[in-house]
Image 1: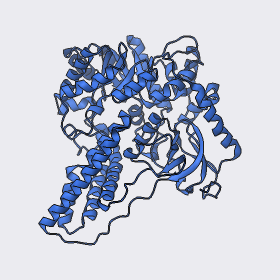
Image 2 (image 1 turned 90 degrees about the vertical axis):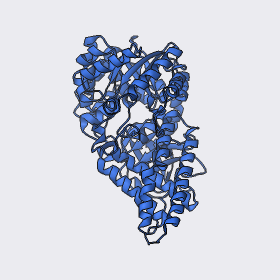
Image 3 (image 1 turned 90 degrees about the horizontal axis):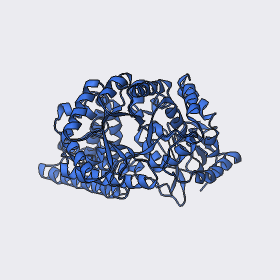
Image 4 (image 1 turned 30 degrees about the horizontal axis):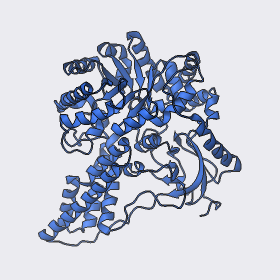
Length: 568
C-alpha cells in the first residue's frame, strides 16, 4: 500500500464535520458501480418473459433476505434502514416496469436497469425527501443486478487493515453495516449534516466529514488526516497532524463512562436522554447511563411491513423498550411516516412535495385509525411495564392539532401528551400549543430544513442545514420562552443535542433536557460540567448574535477549552 504517493489535490479539503474525532489512515474508495447492461434488443415470447420476470423476482427476494439477515446483527436504528431497503428490492412497481420493458425486447438486466431508473427519476422529480429515496432505488438495482450476474454485491471495500472510507455517498444499506473496527473515518463528497449517512455515522461513533469538495482527487491508498469536528480532510498530513490524531486516540479514553447525571458546574440539572429505535437500542442506552429515552422512533415497528402491524405486535415491541427503563421517562414519538419514510399502506408516493405533505400527525387525516391503534398499543405496553411513558406527535403546526392529539391520548389513558416542534409555526406559537399539552421537544433536523428552506439531504445545501444557524437558534429560544411562560418542559431530540458545544448553547437558551445518540452522552456530560448556567446563557447570547453558523460555532468553541482538551 502506498501512503506517500502524490495526490492531485493541494492542501486541506474543507467539508462539513458531522461526527468528531481525529484520525490518520489510508483512503479506500468505494468500488465502482457495476457495468451498465448493454441495450441491444432480445425479443422474448410471453413464456420466456414469465420465466425471466420470475428470475428477477427471485433475485430481488434473495437481496431482500440478505438485507433482512444483515439487519439482525446491527442496531435497531440501522435495522430500520435495512428493512426499508429490503422492501424496495421486492417492490411490485419495479418488477412490473421491467416486464413492460421486456415486452419491448430488452434483456432482463437492461429491463431492470431502465425500470429502476424510471422509478428513481420519478422520485427525483418529486423533490425533497423523496429525491433522497432515488439513491436507495439505484442501490437496490445494483444489488439485484449483481445477484443476476452471480457476482458480489457492491459495498464496503475489503482491506488488510483499518482505513478511511471515501465515497460519493453511501447507500443506507452500506452505512448501516459500517464496522468501526475497520473503518477509521468516513468522508463523502455528497450528503449533508442531517443526511442518513451522517446520522448513522454519529450513531456508530465513526469520525465523519460530508460534502467534501475535491475528494475524487485523493488517490486510493493515500494517507489522510480527518478532523470530524472541524470538517477538514488533509491529504499527506504533516507530522503535527499525525501527532494530533495520536493525541486524540489517547484523549478519547478520558471521557470515561457517563455516570447518569447531566448537570452544569453550578448544579443546574439537564437530564441527558437517549434517542432509540427499538428494544436492543434501549438496552444499550440504559447500559450507557442514559437518564431515560427522549425519542423512541416507533417507525421500527412499521418499516418493512406492507400492511399495518397489529396492536398486539406493536405492544410487544414497545414493551421491550419500556422494560429497559423501569421507573424512568420514555418519550414515544408516534408514527412519523411520509417523506423519506414512505409506507405502502399509509402514504401517497405521488405527492408533489412529500416533505411538505401528509406526514407525521397529518396521516391521521387521510388514514384515520392507524394513530388510534398505535396509541392503544402504547397504552397497553405502558400498563404492562413501569416506565414513565410520555407520548408526542410529530409534524404539528397549530394549537388545534395539539388539543386534538391531547384528547386522543386521554381517550387511551395516556396522561402525558406532547408535541414535536419541527415546524416554524409550532415554535412561533409555542405558548398557545403548550397550553394544550404537557411538554414539547424540538426536532432540530426538520426545523433546520424548514426554517432555511433547504432539503437536509442535498449536499449542495449542506451549509444551510447547519444546526448552528442563528435563525434556528432564535426559533429554539422562542420555543423555550414559550415553554417557560407556561411552566412546561422543552427538550431537544434532534442531532444538535449530540454536539457538546451546541448542547451548552441549548442549555443556555432554556432547553430543559437533551436527547442524543448514546455514544454522545459522556462527551456532552463532560463539557456541560465545565460551565455554569450563567456561562451557558452568555455563550447562547454569543451564538444568537452571530452573523453565520460558522461564526456562531467558532465563537462558542473558542470559549470552551474542554473541547480541545478532549479532542472534541
